[in-house]
Length: 250
Ligand code: XBP
Ligand code: MG
Image 1 (cartoon, rainbow, N blue to C red):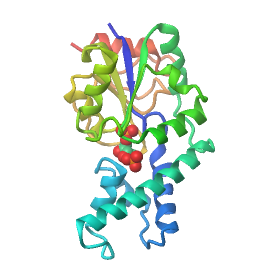
Image 2: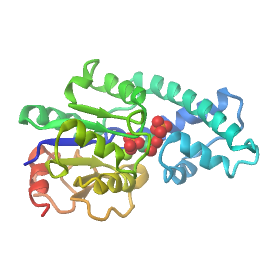
Image 3: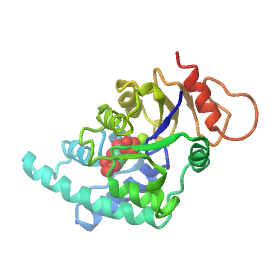
């Protein structure tokens, strides 16, 4: 039986990357007087590296002006990343990044239908707090039975650590849950922990292969374009659809 839905954050709850993390990263470069800028295409490439800090270190490998020693690079990446997160939190706290279609409705359905929810993300707690406080309300965390963030699980997705931790906190077996993710890295993390996954594709991961996902579709806000297909009724993906995919997983 489905006991809990495990929500990824970036790309799944909201399109946070291009209009959030990328904007904030370029603002941080600018404020620190660093002449680097990431454009949308470069950011898409860098998203293959999990984690903003790790992404910065990776990018420095091809930045001619980056410090030579790993120690200095790490210190610089930490400064840029901390400032990026402050600017990101301010941006999302202003309400600039809405939740994706169908997300809030599914939150409400889970509450009404006795299905627990948890957050499983490799972004930091402050970023999640800023987004959900702005979009759901100051008491957003009362909706979630567990919130696992980068501070809890330093090994980023595709490492399954965040999923293993959340299962432990919820005291559930993987087969009692479904993860909702947008990326192949998220899929790999959940799958390695034994958690079945529904993929709601986000802007940057539109064409990525997602082998073994329970279901794949363009948005929770529409019943069109899902595989396996849903009935032709209008409307969004609901809890009954998730239960159905979950039941049919064997
Ligand atoms: C996605 C990520 C994050 C964000 C940026 O996390 O890989 O690194 O891109 O956030 P998820 P940070 O999909 O698990 O929510 O800069 O805080 O890493
Ligand atoms: Mg994601």
